[in-house]
Amino acid sequence: MASKINIYHQDVAWLEGLANIKRKNYLLKANSRKIFILRLQKFLNLLGNPEKKLKFIHVTGTAGKGSTVNLLQNMMIDSGLKVGSYTSPFATTTIEKFRVNHKLISPEILHDILNQQIKPALDKYITLYKTDVPSYFELCTSIALLYGVREKCDWMILEAGLGGMHDATNVIPAPVVSAITNIGLDHTEILGPTKKDIATDKAGIIKFGSYFLTSETDQKLVNIFKKTCERKRAKFVELKNLAQNIKGGQYFSTPKQKTNLNLVLNILALLKIQPKNPETVINDFSLICRQEIIQTNPKVILDGAHNVDKLNNLIEFVKSQKYKKLHLIFGAAEDKDYLPALKKLLPQVNFLYLTRFDNPFRKSASLKKLFTQCENLATIKTKVFHDSKLALAEALKNAKAKDLVVITGSFFLAGGLREHWISEEQITQKLKTK
Image (cartoon, rainbow, N blue to C red):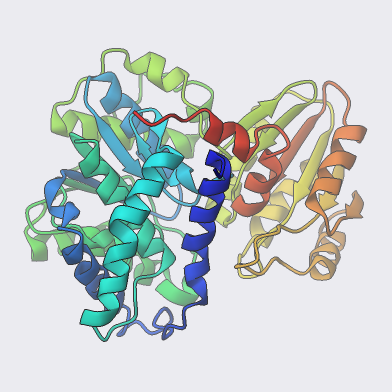
């Protein structure tokens, strides 16, 4: 009999293998992207419409989505509610995307949902509809919804994967609350070249009758949200400064993270949800590969920051740390605009290790180009590694007890190197079917 971890690997390989199904590329065609929601809705119809059996909070934004969703979930759990969440991306293992209360979905439950519901519905879909079958992300969204229904969640919190209007998570009916953390320049090749374009796309999560909140401060962008609320008869809720008297713990120590904290507190106040120990939840908060201190002596920070906003927030966090020398392990995706933030970060760096991530579905930035760029920005002792694990080994060998090692530039890089401390096997073996 196959072991639990082998069955899990087979299930994940099946999910990821769906990428080899030929589909039309609608992603770069704004007028055609509505197909994503249409085909997913047809698929959910075959699954008994789990999206109609849950109560939702929907969150999007350029940065801060993950911390907002996870803190909101933790606070709601602390109030006694049963809360599911669906987030992306994952650091080490696919099941990190699906959570009910503080537990990840178990490999056994994932296996049941795939074999009893997803696969039969996918087979039937082919015989009924002419449109392409749902993508990997759309199927993962379906799994999250089925899991939330299976576990009888009081609430389901969804983090949009990309944009808002045509994101798979936007297949849901009107959520009770929709929220946008902020607007920055990311995924411009898909969402548009300006912040106005991106705000308009993300405003697509605003639906009839919902409450809407945002921590964005640019009034021109806020006005886009207000007009969308007026058009869809949603209720725009102005934020109150509820976080001003809260220290915020280690994670919420930077101004940007403080705004995410304030957004969460406003959502809770709106819904009249009162956590029993809010300050304890805030002080104990941590997030995988987001300013995650994975080791001490030397201290190692994992952060999947991959755009200007997220990297700037990491820079503020690094400034708050005490250390002698800074060792930076950096790798990025080819399509990310990392240079503006890197210009700010490199002057603080003593040793630079440039590398790449191993994900076969995304193109890593050219190491030759990255090396040349960094040479032009600062004079730092720099080494290049095509193998990120060798870069990590070199940094850990060179770093003294009071030094700081920061791994950043890509969530794929941070997540892949996290396995040095916590493996996929360790995560999956701890999870038991209820």
